[in-house]
Image (tube, rainbow, N blue to C red):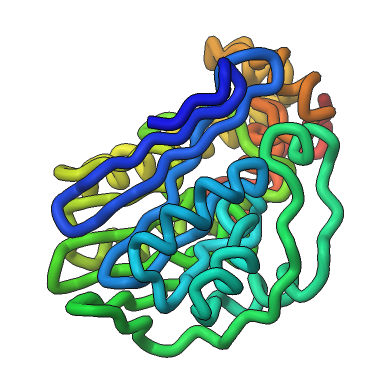
Length: 287
């Protein structure tokens, strides 16, 4: 474990043939949320947050990294890709959407700059059908929802799913403004058609029973969106829907992120997303 006072932490974890570096940086004390980047068969899956660049580079150098696969563009996952690539001579792979973001330095909100830091731009290689490593083959699966460019990587012979931010938790308290609830539901359904047991999540790895944890999240999101739609159909606005469902806004998060992360976003996502799973929202549903 590496610790810099109470502000930065880095821990290494081993899950059989998968190794991870857990990174975090606090602004007002201990990190509120840490981020995992993984190494398996010489492939780095995500690269960690820029404020922990030196630690991440040293970790992936020791893992004899020869390829980097990004799940999505968010800087806590992509932020050290350029530095790790330069240090190890590794190509960086990602979806076309991720490549578009990573082509140049993209703007981020103040809270993201303070907690994670800005990602360095780097040209990405197009995703092949298989990202091959030493005894490892990763199959990319498009999973938009958390972000439009989101991709997960399945190792079918090992039962591993490198899930980026598709999982995070069984129950979610808030959404980022860019998240799409209908897409996330469809992505979970798509991935659950595959066989796997371990979910190597970007924030909460599940070394066994991971498929059930993804089912739990899918059930939660489907039930949540159905309840929100039903209440909106009765004419309730988002604030009243939250009260009816006994849900409380995490005000520190909403204020700290200037509204980019909130329960309100999650309710709005249920109201504006595709009616494939829900009835139409009431026209007077306002916050």
